[in-house]
Length: 229
Image 1 (cartoon, helix red, strand yellow):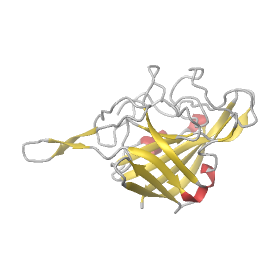
Image 2: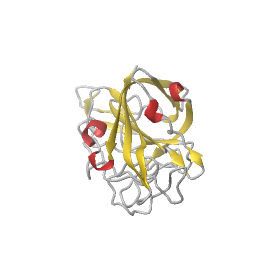
Image 3: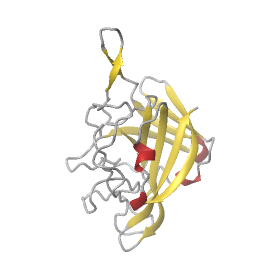
Image 4: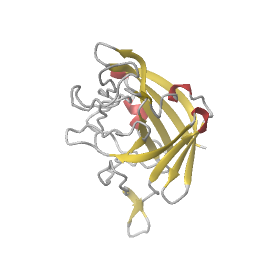
């Protein structure tokens, strides 16, 4: 799995340097961009499968194929390719979210792409897809210059709330919220979010906390942890 750097916007996730030109969101009452991602992930994120994953470049709805090394389909040692259906949408009934989802890849400066549509979510294409072992990571804006965005109410989720991922083949993957955490940007729980897990899990991430008018950024991240229902 490649290193993940999340860049600017109302999601605040990224192990990219600040000032990378990726500020795309602001407080609903602010004048300047304020959706900032700062040092949330290291230069290298360990694969949940214990080895590298490969995927297509994301950002416009492309599908991703994840090769899981170290698993054999036969005694001959044939590598198993796990290719879950591509996620295309997310529904969170408790907070009224029903949004489309696009794959997000890495930019040349190693910052992650962010959805350009504030009503849209994105999943990290270089990590596990929803339904695969490991933590699938989904990003969404909290607000924009024009008002609320898709994950505005993410902070109100409670343990047991349902999160449904819609997939391109019409199937769904359902998770239930385990917990919600809020962390300062410089104390992002990298290992807890991106570290390997034996089962399929989900992470939802957006901006939170106060909006710092001086730097035009939110000061915290909201992280929702969920497991398969």
